[in-house]
Image 1 (cartoon, rainbow, N blue to C red):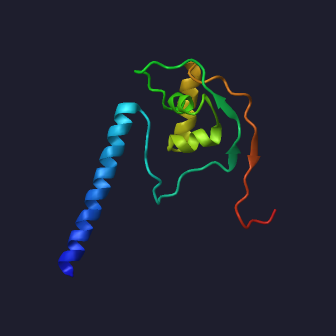
Image 2: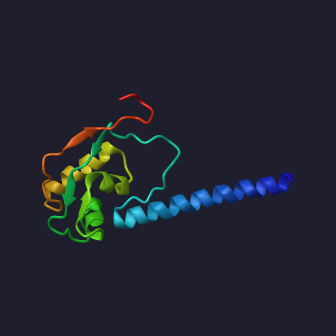
Image 3: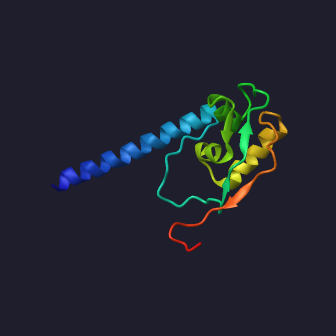
Length: 125
C-alpha cells in the first residue's frame, strides 16, 4: 500500500506539472491565459462589471491583444464581467490590459460603466 500511495502521489504531481506546462505554452504562443480556477481566492470587485465591450479594429497576429482576441471569438461583443472571467487574471491586470487595447483601438471606447453593488449571499439587505 505504501508503494501504491507513492505512485499515486507521483502521478498526481506529474499531471499538475503537465497541466501547468500546457497552460504556459498556450499563453506564450497566443497571449491568452488558460489558467484553471485555483483554490486560492481571486481578487474580485465588490461591484458587477455590466458595461458591454465591443471589438474595434482587429489587431494583427503579432499584437498582444488577448481581450480583443476573446471578443473576436464571441461575435465581437461581450459583457465586461464575462470578458474578465474569460481573461482569467486579477481585476487590476484586466483593467490595465483593457486600457491598453482601447488605446490601440482594438476595443471600442466603452460607454461610461454602470456599476451596481453586489451583496454577499446571506447578508441582510
